[in-house]
Amino acid sequence: MSIEPRFPARIAALMFAAMLALPAAAPAQSADNPPKAQRANTLKTPPRDSKVLGGIERGADATGRGIDRAGSATERGVNNVSERASQPVRRVGEAFGRKLGGGHAAPPPVGPQGSAP
Image (cartoon, rainbow, N blue to C red; front, top):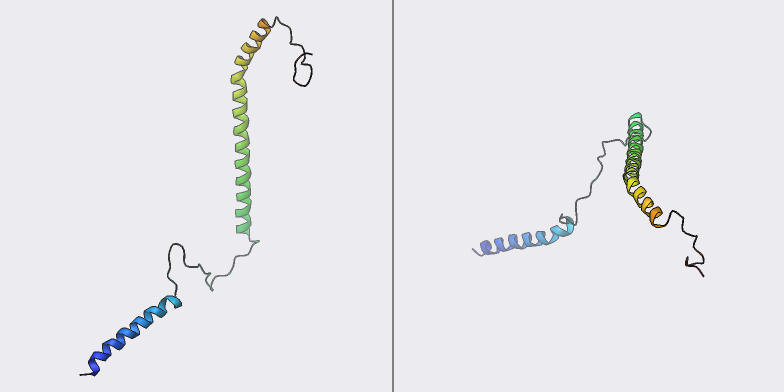
């Protein structure tokens, strides 16, 4: 009868020791410590100069050029439209300026501040 009470205590002690040793052998995974991705040994690395990868690279380059051209065309279009839309307003402003100024251009500014001496 004296053997039975010590046996569960030994098992508990061994399990406790195993739990203490477990984190040192295998660190826990968390959001801050994600598992490391490893490449499979059975896969060969693809060649860098293959037809498929070269085609993908050329396609990506052409896509980038197309996006740049589209952005430039959009910018030119916006600039042209805003220029045309502001022309009537500018013409009216220039006409008022000519009428109020007597039709003569203002004399050129004199000095660094643009005021007459």
